[in-house]
Every structure is written in C-alpha cells, then in structure tokens.
Image 1 (cartoon, rainbow over the protein chains, first blue to last red):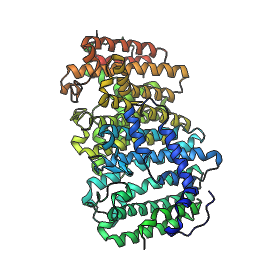
Image 2: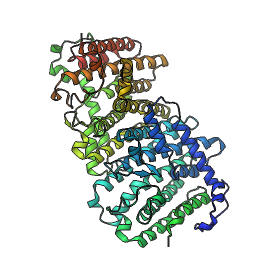
Image 3: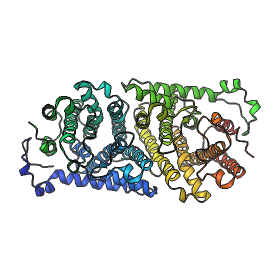
Image 4: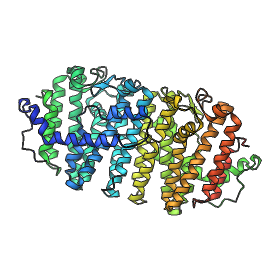
Amino acid sequence: MDLAPRSMKIESENLSLKAIEESELSRLRVAIEDSLVSIVNEPSGAPENLQNAMSHALLAPSKRLRPIMVYLMANPSNSDVKAALRVGSAVEMVHTASLIFDDLPCMDDAKIRRHKPTAHVAFGESTAVLGAIALLTRAFGVISELDSISAEVRTRLSAILSRALSCNGLVAGQELDLNCQIELSDSSAIENMMWLKTGVLFVAAAEMGAVLRNASDDQVSAVRLYAKHFGLAFQTLDDILDHTAKASDVGKDVKTDSYKRTLVHLFGLMQAKRKCQHHLMLADKALLESGAMVEPLRQLTSRLFVNANLP
Amino acid sequence: MDLAPRSMKIESENLSLKAIEESELSRLRVAIEDSLVSIVNEPSGAPENLQNAMSHALLAPSKRLRPIMVYLMANPSNSDVKAALRVGSAVEMVHTASLIFDDLPCMDDAKIRRHKPTAHVAFGESTAVLGAIALLTRAFGVISELDSISAEVRTRLSAILSRALSCNGLVAGQELDLNCQIELSDSSAIENMMWLKTGVLFVAAAEMGAVLRNASDDQVSAVRLYAKHFGLAFQTLDDILDHTAKASDVGKDVKTDSYKRTLVHLFGLMQAKRKCQHHLMLADKALLESGAMVEPLRQLTSRLFVNANLP
C-alpha cells in the first residue's frame, strides 16, 4: 500500500469518485469481496435457501471496515496476503452473523440492512437464525484451516475472536442494550455498552491483524487502544447518523434506537460530535505507537467521518 | 475405566440405582458436570440475566452423551484427563446452544427442555439467543486456549467442530427439518436429515476424542462410522420416545414432531425399532475396529436403549 500522505481531515471535494475507485483502499475492498465470495461459494451441498440467506447477508454492500482493519494492521507480504484476507473475512462473517441476530424481531426488529431487506424478512426467521449460526461457526473453521500460518497463530486468532463475541464481549453489549436500559443512566455505562457492542470487535480485528504481523506486546497494546477509540468514535458516528440521516443514506432502519439512551440522547448532537472527535484524536495518538501503517488507516478514518460534520 | 465386561443387552433389573451411582460411567458424568460448572462460572462480568440463562441451559439435567463420547474415545492418561473433559465440555456447550436455538418460537417453539422451562420461556427470547451465541463461541475459545495440548491438535479439533455445525452439517439438518418437509418423502432423505441434525455432532465428538488420543487414520474412520450409526440409532430412539412417552418421562415437549415426517411416521413403530437395532449392530461392528475401549461404550449404549424395548 503506497498511499500518498494525507491530512487527517480530507475535504470531500478532493474525493472524486474516480480517485476513490483507484485508491489502494478500494482495491483492498475488492480483494476482500472476492475472498468473501469464494468462502460463501465453497461447495457445501447446503440447502439452497440457507445458502442464499448466507450470501444475501454476507455479500450485501458494506464498508468492510473490520477486514480492512485486519489487513492494514497485518500489513502482509505478498505470500501472506491470502491469509490476511481470509482472517479478515472470518471477522466479517462473525460481524454479519451478529447483524442478522441483532435485526431479529426479538431484538431490534429491523427491516432494512445494508440497503436490502434483513435476512429474516427475505428468508424467514428460522433460516435467518440458521444462516447466522452457519456464518459464525464457519468463521472459526476458516481460521482453523489456514495452513499457510502456524497452528500457534491460528489458535491465538481463534481465542481473540471467541473472547470478542463472548458473554462479556459483543453478546454482553447487546444484552445490556436490549434488556438492561435501566442501568444505562450515565455516560460511562453507555460508553461501556457501546464499546461492547461495536468497539470490542474492532479491537479484536485490529489485534488479529497485529498477531498476523507478529507485532510486539507493546505494539499489540497500542493497536488495541487505537481500535478501542476508533470503535467508540464509529459507534458514536452511527448514533449521530441514526439521529440525523434518512434510511436511504445509511442503508438501514434509522431512529430504531431513538427510544434508547444513546450519547446523542443523553448529551445532544453537538456534545456527541465532540466525543467522537475526541476518540478520533486518541485513536490517532495510539496509531503512531502501533507499528502499523499510519497513512492508509488515517485515510480510512477520513473517509468514514467525512459526512459527520465534526467540529 | 475398568468396567467389568457386560453383554450388549443389559437387563434393567441389573441396573440398580446404587450400581449406576457407583459405576465409572457415573463418575465420569460427575467429572463432566464439574467441568461444565467451572467453565460457566469463570469470572466474566457478564450481565446477570445472560449468565443465568447460560447456566440454566448448560447445567440442566442431561445425559452428557457427547462429552462422554469424547472422553471414552480419547481414553486419556491421568495428565490428559482435564483436556479431554474440557473438549467434551466444548461439544456440550455447542449442543446446548443448538437446543436453545431449536426450541425458539421461530423453530420448534418448545416450552420444556431437560425437565425445565426452555431458555426463551425462562429468560425471554433475546437473552436466550444471546446466551446460545455466547455458549457457541465460548466453545471455540475453550478449545483454542487448551495449552496442555499442541496447537496443531487444537486447530484440528476446532475445524472438526466448525464443520459439524456448518451449513452442510447440523444447521443444514435443522433447515431441512423445518423448511424443506416436501423434500423428505423417502427414508433415505429422512435418514440424511436425521444424520445431519444429530449424528453429525456425535461423529464430531467421537472424532475429536480419537484425535485427542492420536488415533490412526483407519481408527478415525472406524470411530466416525461407529458414531454415525450410534447417532442414527439415538435419533430413532428419540422419535420412538417422542411417539410413545409422556413429557415427564423424557423431560421435553413430546409429539411436537408428530406433524413431520419421521421414521416412525413413515414406517410405523416396529420398523423404526428394527432400524434402530440395525444401526446399533453396525455401530458395534465399527467399534471393534476403532481402537477405543469397547466395554464402557457398550455399557453406555445398553443404558440408553434399555427403555426402547427393541426387538
């Protein structure tokens, strides 16, 4: 990745469609899509409806942030590119499974996701649940079977991914959000819930990339800190967009969270934006200590937050 | 395990409660319970309701067939006992998660499981789903973190477990059962569906045990064949009991499957029993080639099928 240096805040007029198409980041996204397509199309003899539900959810338009994070943190040599893409794909499969579950009638009861009907709307609830289980468990298989990297690294990746999803990780965040609203009365409790729901998988993705590049313990700590603040900023952005955008802009139901206590709800839009900006600054500081390639990650941040109108 | 030889068909009067309590098999079951309790009680800081849902489902009364299978196929030395119990526990966690999912309103809509209210009845649907995801993903973490066995073996175990659950494994079986009834018109299609729903995880459990004991490829093949026929016999038994028993006997809703095409539905009770017996014979034949300890596995079979009144 030989991206020209850019300032952290890119003016949107500089991002012409052509430039985006041709950038390294966009080529990376294409490579990730190819990896996901190849995984989901591996011959399996699965029932057709189940297979279609998995493809529907996994291949819907997405920013592919987590696999991009894995890849940029891994900074793989040519011979390691495929493994980095497969590991990133495993994280994306887990993320997609979590979205299918979150969208279920018994959770957020969402109808639109990634600009398409949610899996349970398109394929029925039982097939959606089964497709999510299949994506989740296949993710661990993809990692386990990666024989181009050592078994030690594979078990470490698997352990990181498992922890991120566990009952004190992503699953805990969703439980707190859905069923423990009474406990979410102050900003630290809400930030904790948000961190669990979103940040924890960003952290896992970034850490998995760092493990792939054989980063030092100090670098892994910096990578985790970077990803934690990046994840918190991203979730705050999500809340901001949920508050201000139309469904057609974000590709999913908006204001479904409006009854809940979010940072926007608690502090108002401007303060949420300030918090978002603050997390981005802390992320950037940690990034410099992480041993990762700084510029492509800064470019990624700039692109994501360009529409947030941060102060 | 130094169990006295027994004939395959044990008369029920020989199985006094005291003998059962004192048998090696019962002691093994206690060790498995202890392992499950220790895993589910590991400090996590999980939301209380979520933690309770996981314990409720995982620690409810159960035969613990799959972890017993792992253990007896592994036949561990003293220093390997804990690892065999942990691997067995991981399989039981996955099995329990699959039961929580199967019992959901959008699937079998069951109210009773393992003599207790199903997880979604006791804790609400969203918490039940989240608890199942947590059990499923933690299972892969338990295997990944088992540093008393080599990383190579851990990745192999993880790959076997992932395949068993995948979209052409257990998940496919449930999809076929729920949403593809029209395709289940002959006995081979029904047996295939049953194999995917139940047999495939028995096969995985047995294979994982064989991998732990470092069995030869031929032995692994025999182990898989044994477990396949054992699993098919067990699922047929389940259908038979569902047809003939009261809920209080089996600890779950009965006749919920009566609208579906099962072997009992297709051939009648006597033919289903004959098929069950046939699978048990084939299982016993493969067992002799498997390199596993024959007697405790025969004893297990005898105990399980004693109430089926096989011909």
